[in-house]
Length: 238
Image (cartoon, rainbow, N blue to C red; front, side, top):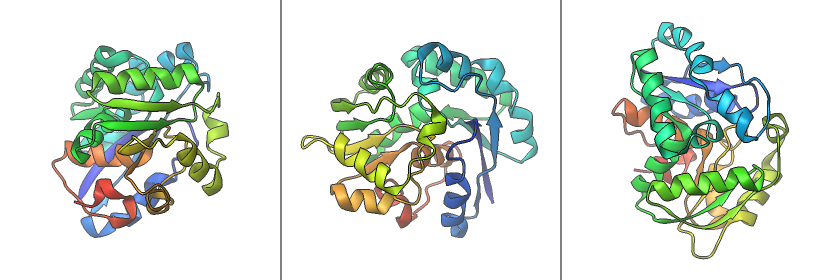
């Protein structure tokens, strides 16, 4: 049994994780999750920097260690890429040192997943305000990806994003797609996507990477596991 631990900010779409754990049951994978204190719920640079601060992440580490986690992923995109490429590396290095475990974040999960799929041109369909979405674009550029389009939705709080259902998720992906994009990225762990991955890819006709999906994939990567799960999209196909 492989156990991967997640530090998840607040309460929005955390039920994606037990859903994915169920879909990965044949692979004997556990996905224990600990909620972190987010402070101010806002997709705003100052709030995101505080949300991803070392002391907030450290507070949940001991509970994850006790769960038997073999690796830990900071399950938040915006409060990792907001630090920039170098700062996000420092964030996960500090988390790894604190936890005594391999560590990563959702931002790096996207970078690694894009590389694993062998695509270079991507479209970003974000729930964030435009200025925050542009920071993600810059992060992906640092990772070597070409972002052919970026669409923000102007949603300020994770709480609001967490209320979005199938119709809104499919609409966001379709609106953010671009003819030149080889894959579409939905970068918010507050967005429920685990139930819609195969439908998203069928609608767009290309791989779709979503925040909670790539976060789980990144945890598996940290432990050296490659797991197939058709319901979790192209990323889990090979």
